Image (tube, rainbow, N blue to C red; front, top):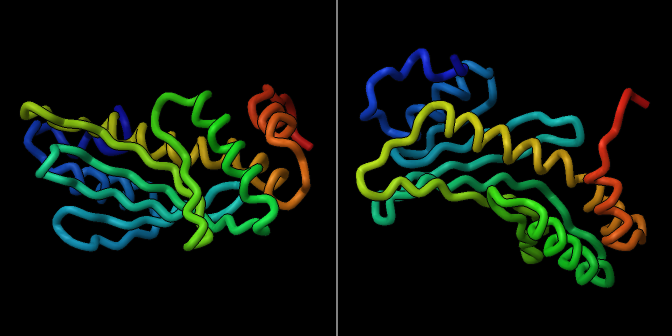
Length: 167
């Protein structure tokens, strides 16, 4: 049983209520911004990630944005964008985008619940944990390209190789 499923046996529970329960049980800092939106801060190994989840009844979608600061020098931005495209080609559950004006990088994912479908606690927990895990996995590659003058191909290899043990 996942962290939140024990509290939600009924099928007709608002997705943001499930996210709030998950945040409470995992002791993440969060702020319920309204009935349909919540913001959280989740501490990773590399940094603290800001997550926002919002429910859109208009298109029956639970939207997740996991963002963190990434503001490389202007000269390195094309290489960062190239790395983002390469990463997005490797993952299936969402995508990264660079918001240069805000100096942010974000991972975005949308869970479509059309036709009266409801989100399960497992789905919500998986999408939150996946967003953080992918951000953690590729953060070193973004650093290597943005500030270390590495080629995107080299940085991506570092991020996707299996690592064993600890340094």
